[in-house]
Length: 333
Image 1: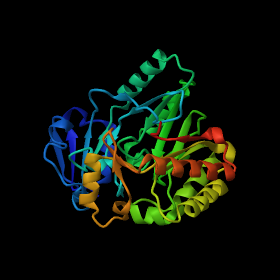
Image 2: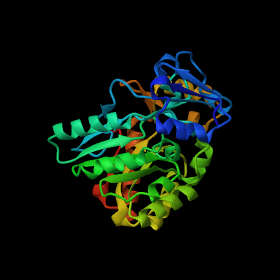
Image 3: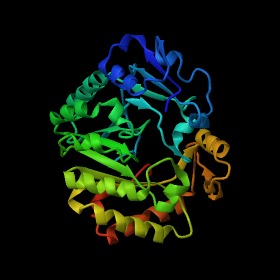
């Protein structure tokens, strides 16, 4: 899977380092002083990940937990995300990571206790009734969790943070590590979903809709709270019928009491990311869309079209029996 593993010297004897390297006994290892000295220093084309993917193991320095932007999550609550990894094994054509880092190589940060200390600090400072912490902003929370092994630590951490919620955001069906843990009411596993044909067309290398729905069903039966992200929604002629079918499939496998929330978001890019999308996937049907550049520097559908799409989706959710208060619009006013 990896052409090389690069390890910071200060964590050379970390038990998780040994666990990971033992899984790849034939992969050459190089010791480095700091991840930042090597990762992204020379621009590496995003699609080079198909032939040459390196793995970095290190410790995250600087700001470990960041405040999320407005409209990132449910209104009236504080939202933060923490950084435990960079990049993803999947290859979604719209992924913003292709324009974010100078490299598609994977980075696993192993200093979870330091991240946890910052989470507790923010928790104690907060006067909010509920504070959210999101994992998976720069990576997939579950796809490599059998290697990274941090889930038991965070489950123990949030056991003592009753006014906090942890979101594990994923497109993966790698749920075995979760099935080995006891579900907690304040830990939500959230799946990004699209209609089956759209996943096949643009969510490259990701599990199919069928397999994601099976993972949702299994976790819900195990007692997990589940969140759903219908994001990014891409406009098509059969947009309504495609999402009507998708919502029906979701409610068939996910009992209403196990649904924590459902977010709706329309496809959007920064200018830099959209440039990379056009470069990396010149034949993608994403380019047939009527995007506009906004004053905020985003490339997205005109607002009347976006709002029409979102309100139609919201109506479909309610028609499917999903409570209106569980539905929110992501990254919109």
